Image 1 (cartoon, rainbow over the protein chains, first blue to last red):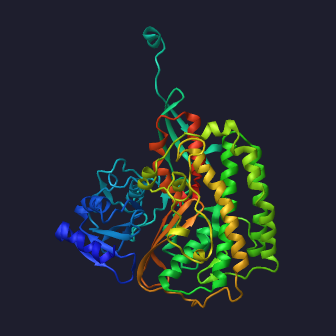
Image 2 (cartoon, each protein chain N blue to C red):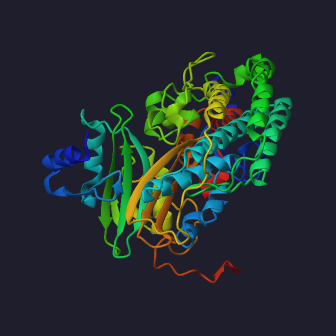
Image 3 (tube, rainbow over the protein chains, first blue to last red):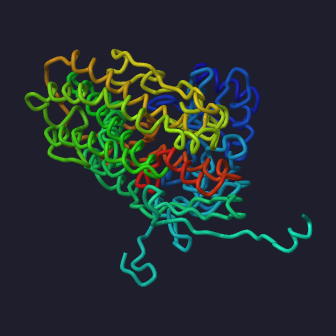
Amino acid sequence: MESKAIFEAVKARFGDAAIELQEEGFHPPFLVVSSASVREIAFFLRDDPGMRFDSLMCLSGVDYKDRFAVAYHLHSLEVGHKIGVKAYLPRETPALPSVDPVWPAANFQEREAFDLYGIVFEGSRDLRRILLPEDWEGHPLRKDYKYPDFYHGIKV
Amino acid sequence: MKARAEALPTQEMLINMGPQHPSTHGVLRVILRTDGEVVVNAKPDVGYLHRALEKIGERVTYAQFMPFTDRLDYLASMNCNAAWAWTVEKLAGIEVPERAEYIRVIVCELNRISSHLIAFGSFTADMGAFTPFLYAIRERERINDLFEEICGNRLTYNYVRIGGVSADLPDGFLEKTREFLDYFEPKIPEYNDLISYNKIFVHRLADVAVISGEQAVAYGLTGPNLRGSGIPFDLRKNEPYSVYPKLDFDVCVGTGERGTVGDCFDRYMVRINEMRESARILRQAIDQIPDGPVMAKVPRVFKPPVGEIYFRAENPRGETGIYLISDGTVNPSRLKIRAPSFVTMNIFEEITKGLMVADVVAVIGSFDIILPEIDR
């Protein structure tokens, strides 16, 4: 399925929750969706007979300086097409529903985005830091991150 | 019997496995909750080797990031090098000379063999057979010698460049590679005679930790772990890149030949068979490689256009995906590495429930994880 057709189908089903289609310069193109309806759209993309996006290739947090985003790269082994889904989040309260119930592959990558960006995934089965120590302060991949001088008395 | 059970009450025990443990293939810590010999729950704890490679990536130029990719999956550095180069080239639209692409495929497939050799050797060592590990190291040594001729290094190669490779192949390299293949291909049946169909070995692996095809896809397993569950999906075949479309090879899948499709034995056998397919690819590539330059013209101050790309390559441990955002400057704006081992560890807790403690070791070995790639 072409990305335009996928976008139209999502728009027909979810209305304003499908915001735009980013095509120029994006490989694969992104459906930009409202963060609150990410999980419903994810279920639709997985279960709809025309879509069948059974595989979540990659889930990434992104800091666009003015706002955060979570980018999902989807692939369908059955149909063989690919699409990106992106949800923008405000810097102050970055939170959106977890897609762990849709693709269990999301869990570790959501924990990673939580760890490094502080993005909260609501309804995640186990939202803890994963790469950094549990008592680390701040989220290092944020563009405005300040490096600490010491960690437990050790010079960083 | 009831009275006896009351007389001998059992209780769950919490055991810390790792981070320094010979069978965890690096600094992996597993928190085991056991009931006698049976695992109630096994939580993996990762991050001991976190070096913030993604943060570093935002501070260095595209070319400078190449040596860091060596440190992702150090048993398959060539593949990681090449994945990074392909991503950037695809984003910037750089045409790579055909000879360079052939050289990349040759070094990638050699590295796949050497990586699978370590997977085979360390897995059998985990299962209590020490000798095969020495066989594997002996063969890998010859691949290391070949790589040393190419780039001077034996572990972290930093050989591939954005736009090609750093130097042409040295004289006689292709002949030496062919000699290596003549030597290596008869070794694979030898491994099978030595250990693969050994009764004790098969008993340790067959029907252990069965992952169905559906489950494997849902949990994002890739590479040999996915194919072990019977899904014939290989990026070199299904999403061809580089010169792979010109090369003929079969996709190896698990067949459940000693147990159920998707058990530890299938994942093990996929790797053994893939070494043979890699040798096939190498022979064709050696025959087909054209003459010509090995480096495209890439500006010294390299600024790719604004854009976002997700590229994935079939590495020995599965799909290494790179999500790259360029803002048109000399540094990447965001660089996310989707490491196959990291995503594979996600299924670990699910799949180890109810196994024996010794089987947990079999599961770790059958996944062939590598920790620097998990922790990045």
